[in-house]
Length: 162
Image (cartoon, rainbow, N blue to C red; front, side, top):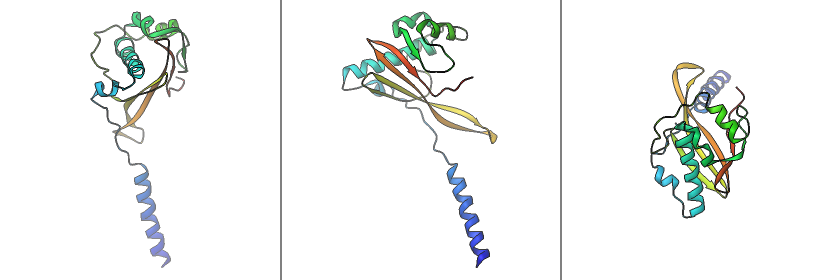
């Protein structure tokens, strides 16, 4: 009886550990127009501001357009980038070069959520599994922005110090 119990428990624990590592992939949403829409014109405008900033400045590398989107005293909560629009431009100009601006955000965008003066972009990110270099997995990344007077005034993301 004891041996049967131990074997059953071992099988259950093995199944639980496998299930504990199961994951549904994080999938991008292809309908950017729908994500940008809102019945509230202010929320739609805030979403569009952040979306266009991401396309033109962040992905497109057109740091000369930063004043169009970022407040001069822009507050940065990413531990690798200093606060201020100038600091943002100085940091990203080290590795961003201007390129043609895409009509849509190119990163795998999952959602755009706006509430009050906040907009959150959520992306899918793919990484190599550290336990098995032949496997990939996806996870979520977010960038959150606060809008003030029609410009991005503050930014958060889950970045850690590099």
